[in-house]
Image (tube, rainbow, N blue to C red; front, side, top):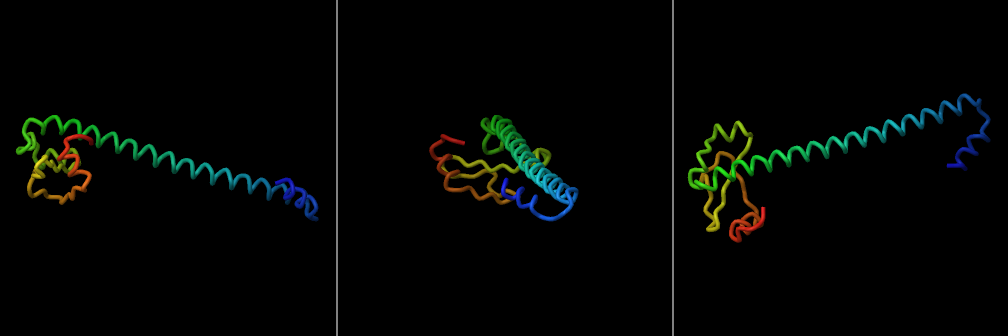
Length: 121
């Protein structure tokens, strides 16, 4: 950085031109850093809020469903649409409810293992 400034000093240009270049470079760098930081922070906050909302929906619906798995605790398509959620319940014997969901959810091997072992989330 110091060498670069010394080279600028050796150039034969007016001081105000060199100063304008230095200031514009500093402003451009600060705008870029601020923009990147704002993007990353917004991305982090949005995903955090989404995760919290999904956990809350899972807790609430889990309480309803635990008493009546086959009937999904009385939840119907309208209630799920209001919550903007799709639910697929997998029992330990790999039976799924609802059997023909409107939106196809494909459980992973990890999901099936959790259902079989009944531990984990």
